[in-house]
Length: 174
Image (cartoon, rainbow, N blue to C red; front, side):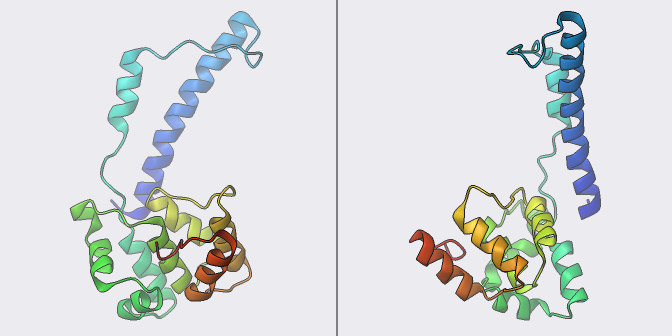
């Protein structure tokens, strides 16, 4: 499945759940007039839940084509990328074959690759989302990474040191 198809599939899955909840809430509002005032909509029938769960994909989305797309756009060879990101050749090889093996890289690995590719915040979010992650406003390290990206500062070592100074713990190399 291509990245675009994977993103569309994830949106479709979330869309079905959101619409189901909206319809139930709208129905409850029209019947009872007090949705949003502590009213809990009725549970979905098990059959509906089973149908929604069946649509969930357990196949990981393929991050590698997106990495290659950015490598080509920025004229960076794969071996230069993983060296600049401080990602081992073994881990990068696992990312290359993740669709077949089910391997899921860590959030910090993806962030290091995004920094090495010098992606902006929205591109970084897309890459993280493909693997099921996101940057959080509740995590200081994520705020630091996001801020550095917004200022176009991509040095992985320096960013890790900023995080160490602020939090006392490793993040990108954990």
